[in-house]
Length: 195
Image 1 (cartoon, rainbow, N blue to C red):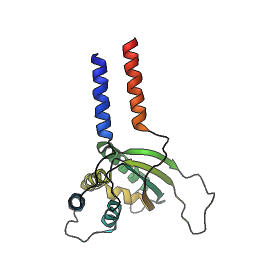
Image 2: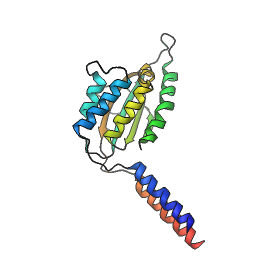
Image 3: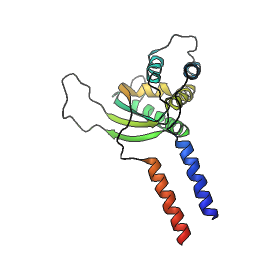
Image 4: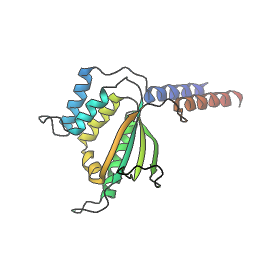
């Protein structure tokens, strides 16, 4: 019975951490988090830069629930002024992953570009495509505040030549994390009870 209790507690902790079903932020909560990002980036007295404007735009559709960000990335090719873009990218990734986990977020899909198929003239080529699951927009803003404090934007933008990022909401997903966790819990309980 002790093992089942531990499993149930771990399951409850996981579901609580993973979340994804919340309430929308109030305007005051959003402004507080955005001001924290600006303060941590040393820009509290400045007008909103483009990234802050992008965060405000993202928050217009806040429903309090999980969402996914599609990231299309083209990296810089050359070392300039002694800055290696790929080394900066690795530094950024090593620092950002713990922050993602802290706020119940994680990569869903990461891939490298393999070539063209339908590609209208003038469209960009990308080096990497990543889809990141965020527990909520509120958690994303909290994470951005922590990232600003660590000055991660410096490494990120030292590596990136061009990027396009946009939110999406899944209506079909082949990766039902909560269902997988529930099934694992049930199988574990059955195994413990009958062995």
